[in-house]
Length: 491
Image (cartoon, rainbow, N blue to C red; front, side):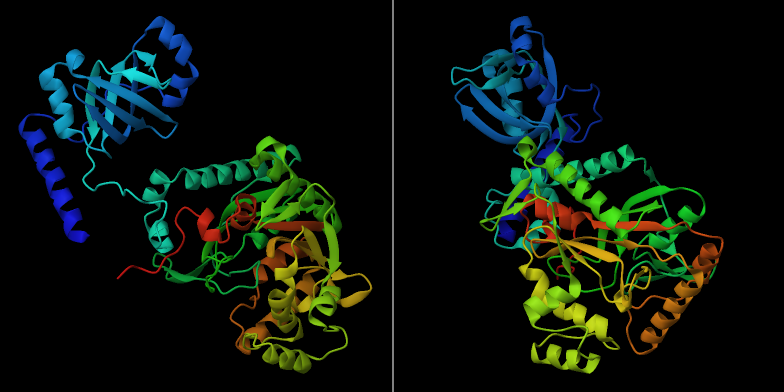
């Protein structure tokens, strides 16, 4: 296989050398701006009537020679057009030059009128052509059935080039992110940017990546979430803010986790978690309609229908544990939960308390069974150091997670704005860290100081972009909806 590839590359390099000797550049600068193929097809009838010459450019995807003529399939990213190369029109030498030096994978520019073939295919008759870029490596012939999925991720450029379904996924991702922005902008939210390099990582229970800033001789961390900076902006007087950006968490990789990922977080003053539940339900419905054809609000996944049209279900965390795991959270101790987890062969992080153990059991036994969009509410306080307590139950918080198809899609809560209580929560998290929990949050005195100046009652929301897009596209791993997921280096 590698020997054959080396031979093909050698032939192509010899062609590049021969072109150079004849004064033809293999990688020239482009002189004329071509018309997009999609635009040519849109105006095709008009161009046929006028016989006006049009210039197109793109990658050669296929060549079919028939005696003194050759049909060439060219794609420029906006669409595919057939070129008709005719010896009688181009001349013997020029036509032979095309046959000898233009291969599948190369980029070509062509000028000429368009017509419809007898088979009804839209085609351009090439009157002039030139080489724009020579490909040295050959395009794969059988990419659709590639067994090594990791190879598809490593060479995503080939995956995109050879697989229209993969390109469609990323076009849908782009539409989903745009729809998110459109929704928030229409509701009066201001898009902002907050630091990716942070002196204290906060805003999520996650282990951060550490780096070093040589100029100031100080350690920094890649953000695990933008939350604490966005809430500083609420203190500063912006009532509605949001950010769509990359977050980084030094944790395991699986179908729903990647070390870097895209998060949308928004914060709204004078709102609570129930208001934010209503907002995210409307937003998800808006995004689904923007991505799916014909404004559909139903998704088929593994033969089952997920309904975004009906009101989302609501279920209490402790009720779900009781129903699916037969655990009465309010009645059991941390030791009893740990014993139950061990029986179920569920790994519990070092230093985990009762809430963390219950959450691991929930993730294993409960969440995979939630198919329809469901708000899971009222988490243990231990899991939510930045959320307000639930009125009437100091052991729970005013929080929700939106779950669908067994995945957490969104997370939100009423934001804790009492500086003294927030400081106490941070101290409790620091104690958990000393017991070995690397994901516990750290004391952030600067954030506490910001709260001391007063933050209005507010609600926040975080949406995992990859998970939402995976749900909308039928992907079973977020790596399918990430252009370049993290991969182990190939040996």
